[in-house]
Length: 259
Length: 251
Image (cartoon, rainbow over all chains, first blue to last red):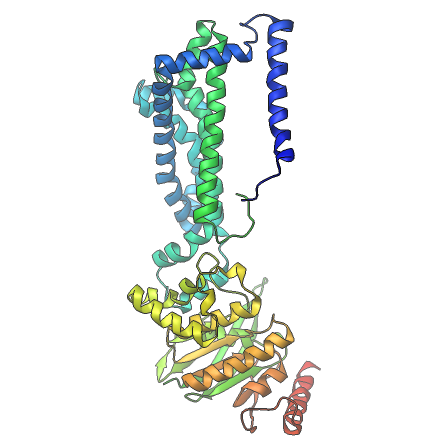
């Protein structure tokens, strides 16, 4: 880690602070209506309130539960499917038409079926996240496997790694990991959007997305904005943690690559 | 032991319109146990194809290849191979690359590391054991590729223009090191190259191939005492003879 000189670090902070000041001034003196545009301080008070009441933590954990159900099931199904399609030509031919037909359906169009199949449960919200997340994972795993250099497979073979399962495990999978990681990142981005939409549509009775809709009905736009910002920061945090882990630990064999 | 017999090997490729062209036709020769044989020939004569067939990576359409009397038809750790391209697994450290073959054979991790350590010392790269391939120079990568193949203790080492992409100085150095390894391990080496110099410096015998379809034009004995002088008169004479043979084929 290089530390930037203070004078350079200052620019980011000045930019942020300026934006907040302009926001506050516009909200207070130009708009003057909390319903249309809550000010920065309104949002801070709303934030303190939801922390004091403790609802933030319930919503946070419920949303993360929905997200976790969706992403983990997308990984469990997506990675093996992508591997099978990438390695075995016939599996690709069999699965490709199905995937290409189902994939363009926007994940949110699945919400009615999610409710019919799973009721208003956590599984239901998780399912919508799953639908959004599974395809980027399949496609990227597949692409990674298809691009495995022949020389690595042949080097593996002459060194005594001959079975398909061993070649997948020791050659193709590690080779494809960067592509799979990029797929997971895209999947988490899509999944995060699906999560909010699913909760707003009432697939669940809790969660950050649900709370946005709920406060909107109550015309508490300051709370709406707090939840929006929390969603943004949480999305950023998840992405950063993932990148830190993947780039720093799993993919340190790649020089200067950005996932 | 590592006696290699190549018997009537032929191979043809199908072209787009269904016509077949012969890449190799009736290739016959023998590599004795512990011998160093180079294959040279005009480009496109099928020398790499021949080596890949010996490795078991490609199938011959006709003929057969025997290693110590046994027919070869699939890759096997008894035949080590060093590729022209950098083939170290980029996701594994140098150490884990060298132990790869041993790990695959189910050897205990501790033991395989000990063997790998020995081989790394052999090429003087033990201090790079925890580095990743991207951190190494081309010459270092090919050294590791060689010891990775050797760690499996193969009977034959197959080398497909392994020094082709290296600069001239590194190349000379690696040729020297390879000879030292060959002498200490008493291993059979079949080495494909397009460089007459390399063939003359390294081998006991040189298999000169014809242009497509590739056949053995002549097996040339290299009667130069080791250690060899690259610029001696007798080496020059042999080089000239070989270059003339290749020039005939390129006409």
